[in-house]
Length: 164
Image 1 (cartoon, rainbow, N blue to C red):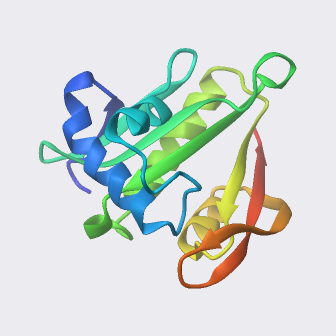
Image 2: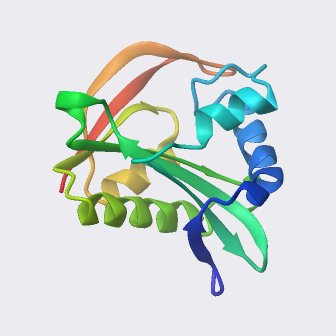
């Protein structure tokens, strides 16, 4: 990660972002997106419009991770931010997710959000739960059996929260 840059997503990044998104979604282990999602549908789901932001983690000219962030809900819920992260399978565990999470938290603080909430963290995704906990998030509730994991069966979805 010595030369990693996190920067705003540019349209020319999508050809490198799409394989990351496709791989994560088709694995069906961490995101509740339809595994048959088309490229166009995935782009619409992933690329945030303002006031949200989509970013990429680039190392050596290669996109190795991506994140999207913005208000958790519109109107009366817009003071709470949310974010989602995806990292290429071959570089997981090397700090790209942490860098993207740190970026998202800084982005939310700079914009005056009161907190950040993750609505659906798959409880069996231990790496993500541990990462978010290290950054100050707490599990404030779990919806039992809300996620159909391909090998573990139905597992819970955590709601995780961090006051900013």
